[in-house]
Amino acid sequence: MRKIILRSKNVIVISAMAMVFAVSCSTPTQNRQHRYAKSSDGEQISYNVYGKGDTALLFVHGWSCDSRYWREQVPHFAEEYRVITMELAGHGNSGQNRKVYSLDGFAQDVKAVIEAVNPKKVILIGHSFGGEIVASTVKLEQEKVIGIIGVDTLHNLDETFTKEEGYKLIGLDGMKKDFKPAVREFVKQMMGKDVKQKLSNWIINDMSSAPQESAINAIEEYVGAIADKKTINIFREVKVPVICINADLWPTNIEANKRYMMSFDVKIMKGAGHFLMLERPEEFN
Image (cartoon, rainbow, N blue to C red):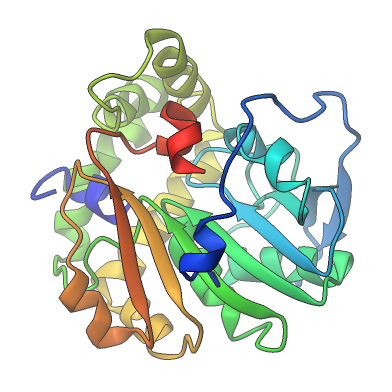
């Protein structure tokens, strides 16, 4: 998400774990009843659990998305792991009563789900701004989190811009004036060159239909956190390996990230777009 915001120059997954990522393309049960955990501020956080095992894979979606964006990952991984999908406050089936949708608040949402499921160990998987969110969760669950997988995220922790520049580049004023068409244009630029039109339309329509108030506040808070260099401080405290699976729409600055992370590596999917887990699920998994 940080490179998408600029529209410009822009877990433990070690090698052995990456080898487990073979997937089927079926989808999780559509009518599964959601479970709920209570976040630190009392907000109800929706989640689902599939499979079983001591190690859980917890999937955290990106801005204005929800747990459905992991539909191509759930069935296969549930054969060997406990798989958890969730919906951050202001998204999907979770509560929308929060006034400020900050990275710290979202991290508390993830923490609440971890504590509700109570796996022995957990690998956090975050798409887009979910990358910073899962990193923010590590300090809250140091005994359980053993690694982070970022999905088209964390492209360059050295990137510098002011809040005003960031807000202008994402088109924040346009979102505030007329949310739906502004978000549609914002999301269009995230698509891979070979993405299927049906999938592209679904993503664009879905994200532009997100709750406006929470969506605007969340992206405003996120851009502000990057501009204020808060995300760099987050990763200085992360003492677990981080591996990203990124598209090549925007370059990933490996050396810059290594300066702030205990351990960082990246795998690039050439020609993919921002929603690579949906665009090319078999390769991604």
